[in-house]
Amino acid sequence: MASKYGLLVRVLLIAALMQFRTFVVIGEPQVPCYFLFGDSLVDSGNNNRFVKAEKANYPPYGIDFPQGVTGRFTNGLTTPDIIGQLLGFRDFTPPYATVSNEEIIRGVNYASAGAGIRNETGMNVGERIIFDEQLLNHEAIVSRISALQNNKTFTIEYIQKCIYLVNIGSDDYVNNYLMPNNYPTSNIFTPDQYAAVLIQRYSQQLTTLYNLGARKVVLFGLGPIGCTPAAIAKYGTNGKPCVESLNNLVKLFNDRLKPLVDDLNNGLSDANFTFINFSGIAAPLNAVPNIACCRIAGPEGLCIPNSNPCLVRALTAWYDGFHPSESSNIILAKRSYNALLPTDAYPYDISHLARL
Image 1: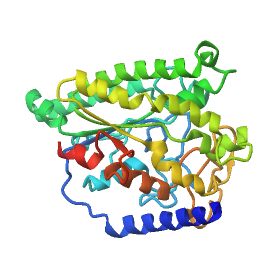
Image 2 (image 1 turned 180 degrees about the vertical axis):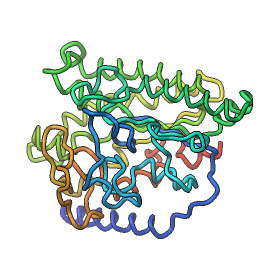
Image 3 (image 1 turned 90 degrees about the vertical axis):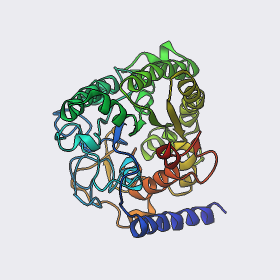
């Protein structure tokens, strides 16, 4: 039965990929701009300029991306890339590291691999742009937009119409709490306490984003880190599909996101935050063997440079040790944009959020 279910999921992966490639039409954007914050699931090249950092600016990353190697941690498009296309944007949101004045009016990608909610998160992997710094970078961009438009009131009204996507927090577990030899957090906090501390800090950061003009904000829950090829190789599963103890850890965080969304929407005037259930949407993908498409080496779970990836990438859920393949990203993006199940998004999906 499990093998039949796995085959069905593989067929759905191919169908999703073909349907997206065939029917996505880029038209007039539904919102004026689109800003992205987060970690390696969102990063599109901001880490490329760092000497020591998690980077994906080499083959076989980008093997299916229109522009080739860019710094995206997958074979093709990321989930935010696809959501941007569904929103009607013709071009991909440029990384902060290289964005021009002509581009900032449509949005900026501030994400950085290794970044977390906590400032110390990811120190073990080297340089990264922490979430607090991403917010400072956005503040600078808003000032640049205001200077270009030469009308502060118009700028405020303009950026309030935009979509802001935030996907961060996985590294607060993978590159913090789950590394007791590098970080003291697991000795200081129980899993429940740690989730509460993260949410408290996250709430403060999201309030800062609101104060910078964000009103339509998409918050991605954490993905099933216990189902990643790297986690399975490191911890084992005792015969189960995933490392349940790790998924239980992130569940404590995810379970607090809906209440956080309610608190922000009720406490901040005109705020429209929404939660995307990453782990719930990704659950069927666990029927596909949790094997990396590319050859990986080291604890970071990244592809070996210039190695040959698997040939039929549409059949894979994971591209490297931690990051989904483009076919998985298409499913995640489409169900984030148009919820398939009531549990996919709360209180509404991205297509609804764009119309508010």
